[in-house]
Amino acid sequence: MSSSRIAKRYAKALFSLGQEEGRFEQYGMELKEFADLCREHPEFGAAVANPVFAAEDRKNLLLAVLDKSGFSGTVQRFLRLLLDKGRMGAVEEIAEVYEKLWDEAANVARARIVTARPLKEGALKALESSLAELTSKKIRSDVDEDPSLIGGVVVKIGDVVLDGSVKAQLEGLKESLKRGGID
Image (cartoon, rainbow, N blue to C red; front, side, top):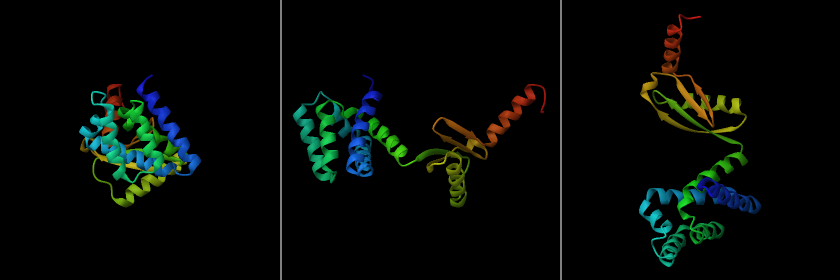
């Protein structure tokens, strides 16, 4: 079974349980926190996921971290289950899938916004408001800078790309000139 199918299966199971218990947001935050810990400390992530280490040692390491975590009992049991089933290496992907399920349930769309220069707060709010109107969803945005855009903005929401950059406009003009002129 592919890792993405595994991640979807486990994420859906925890999400479903979280919905039943009315705590899916809390479980999502806790799962993300653990995945972030594994990402920020790759030696820890490798130690609990790698079957080269004795199962008992991996379990003791995980339990020591969970004891200090303050995570809910459900998330702690979920993480122990991942360890027991040899799926701890997929925890970051499981957290990503969980986040997408959470966004769907909360009617949220994630927008990746790339600009040539930093956006002023008011401009970002106006752009997010327009995107919310366009998608009929709440918008959570990640903003990056790319000076090669020259000016304007590129927005990606899911598979949709809205390219309003000066660079794209110049490329379009260049293509028009190659084809024999501007219409």
